[in-house]
Length: 171
Image (cartoon, rainbow, N blue to C red):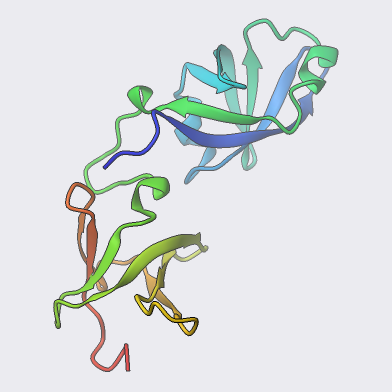
């Protein structure tokens, strides 16, 4: 059930210095995730990374063909993408985009409680936003922490996440 071959990975937010280095705001768990990537895709074109280093919560990157601040400034506000083929996730790790749209199932009642409509990255842990199945205008959002106490099983191929809910949670 994988989505696109390329994933949004961050945004070039500014230049850094006068030699064409760019500052990327990573859309990942940490800048270190992107530090091991060799190629970024900007406007659909592959761009080789010459060097990268972590600076605070950003990744500073020297891109092939970008050697001065004038060229680097033209990349400001561009979204950078990575290829799925360049990434190997650890078991149990998932890209957020792959979880959006999965069915949410209550393991206790075996009921389908809605669809994963968003995942909020919060400091303590992510939170699943589930939009209830009500077809009426009164459908509601249910928030469930993305922690092992609540998440029993994630099965992207079958299209669901099973949640172990606290008794009375949905009433």
